Length: 316
Ligand SMILES: NC(=O)c1ccc[n+]([C@@H]2O[C@H](COP(=O)([O-])OP(=O)(O)OC[C@H]3O[C@@H](n4cnc5c(N)ncnc54)[C@H](OP(=O)(O)O)[C@@H]3O)[C@@H](O)[C@H]2O)c1
View 1 (cartoon, helix red, strand yellow):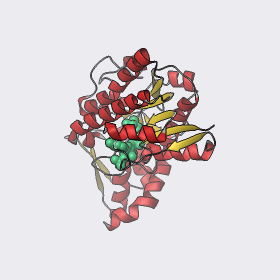
View 2 (cartoon, helix red, strand yellow):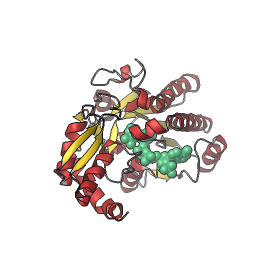
View 3 (tube, rainbow, N blue to C red):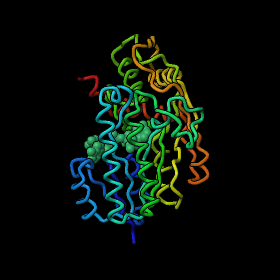
View 4 (cartoon, rainbow, N blue to C red):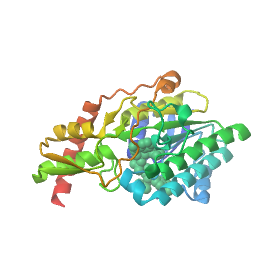
C-alpha cells in the first residue's frame, strides 16, 4: 500500500523540486497530497483540520513558510514570526490529533545564535539570540523543535527536524525586495549586462559568509529523512562549505558576463556575519552529503534566469 504524504508548501521553490523527485522516483510508494495556499491557509486551524479529515495522511512534510532575504525580514518581521509559528504549531497539533505516523519540520539556519562558532553544530542552537535581522523568523521556526520534543514526550508523537542552510537554484524567487542572496545577485548582474550598465550596487560590505545549498541537494536530505527511521534531533542539511558574499558576487558576475564595477552599499545590514554548518549528523543518520559544486550550481541558475526571466524583465 502506498503511503499518503501531505506536503505543505508543495508549490513553492523547494516543494516543486521535492514533488518532481518523488513523482519521478517513488510514484508507487507514495500518494502525494499537495494543497496550495489557496486550498488551505495553514494558519487557520479549522481549515487544517478539514484537510486532515479529508486527506488522512500517514506522513507530513511541512515546507510551507513565509520566507525571504534580509529585505523581507526587515520589512515584515511580524508576519514572518506569526505566520511561521502559527503554521507550524497548528499543523503539528492536527497531525498529532489525526494519528500521523511521521512528521518532518523544515527549520532554518537563521535559528542559530548570532555568534555561533563555525561550523555551526546542532547543540549550539539554543546558546543565544539569533542575528536580529532574522530573529523573528528564526525563533518562530526554532519553537517548533520545542513543540516536537514536547509532543514526543507527552504523546509519543514521532517527528524529525531538519535545519536547512541558504538554498539556491533555478526557479527561485527573483523579486529584488524579497529574494535571497543568490537570485538577487544573479538578477542584478544579468540585468546590468542586458541594460549595458557599468555599475552594480550590492547590499552590505561583502564580508559575510554563507553556506549555500543547491535545491536538489536539499531534496535528497528530505527524502532520506522520509525513508529512514531516525530519532528526533535537529540535523543540519547544508553544503558544509562557505563562501563570502564578495567572492560569490565575483563568481556570479563572471558567469553572467558582467565586467563593470561593484559598489557595496554599507547602509544595508550584512545580516549574520558567518554561516557554515557541521554536517556530521546528516552524514551519520541520513547518509547525506551535498553533491552540487557551487560553480556548476550557479551556472545552471544563471542559465535558467537568462532563459526564463530575462526577456520579460527587460521588456518591463
Ligand atoms: N529558501 C531558502 O533559502 C530556505 C533556507 C532555509 C530553510 N528554508 C525553508 O524551506 C521551506 C521551503 O522554502 P521555499 O524557499 O520553498 O519557500 P517558498 O518558495 O516561499 O514556498 C513556501 C510555500 O509556502 C506557501 N505558504 C505560505 N504561507 C502559507 C499559508 N499561510 N498557508 C499555506 N501555504 C502557505 C507558499 O504559498 P504562496 O506562495 O501561495 O503564499 C509557498 O508555496 C520553508 O519551510 C523555509 O523556511 C528555506
